Length: 319
Ligand code: KG4
Ligand code: ZN
Image (cartoon, rainbow, N blue to C red; front, side, top):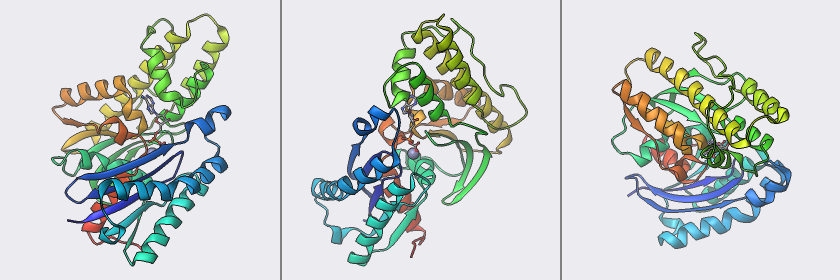
């Protein structure tokens, strides 16, 4: 059975994983860096790159020993080759190249977004192309028709901030610790959406794209005004993001052509209300709904190994 070693280091998670072509995750080792970046309220690229240097090889060794697989038994090495924070990307990709060179194994350079885009197929063997993907992470917010490996038709993107970025910056404005997205979700659960009104940028617009910058500014003004509880602002913010994601996704369902499923991936896909609203939208359009488990939605190396496995099966390796 084909075994792929995957490496991820494009942002603030260092990770190594071993995944087989028949979807067995033999090991996935991950080290977050939240503690190192928390004092700065966001990811500091230079600190991240240095942390990747220290952590990546021990994580590769951990993944190998946990799975009982020897490096010699691996069929190919897949590493995130961008987009991301360039220092971190260099650490992972050069490590992958060095391992490939030393062992004589093929290297597969994986686009990080392709890792997110194909991760639902690792979690669900019944998911076939073409599917409509909402990719919502800290860096991106896109709707894609995923037509095959390396075949992505972009239907919408953000014209300013990504949804995850809006979560993180709003969380910071609300005084929540980094990383903000999951913290904001927890606070929102204690508040009441509708206690104040925040804007839903581009709602019902014929323009296919997303926009979140105005919503973030509205959160800043609401915090400054001091007239509402933080939990209510968080709840209303989250409701506004959900409304925008659903409105734009509904539009894409209409325009994408025949799709096998509605799929969500990327860090914001770990958000409960986002998942629930998308599941409802899919049901209303008689579409299957696929959402990978939360750990596979946020950055990890299993999705990179899996994208590598998909590419390897098609003979797509890199020099
Ligand atoms: O995919 P990811 O791990 O990294 C990127 O490639 O960007 O996504 C990270 C983003 C962050 O903005 C984080 O705040 C957000 O996903 N996120 C969440 C939740 N968990 C992670 N946003 C809202 N609710 C969550 N539960
Ligand atoms: Zn990501």
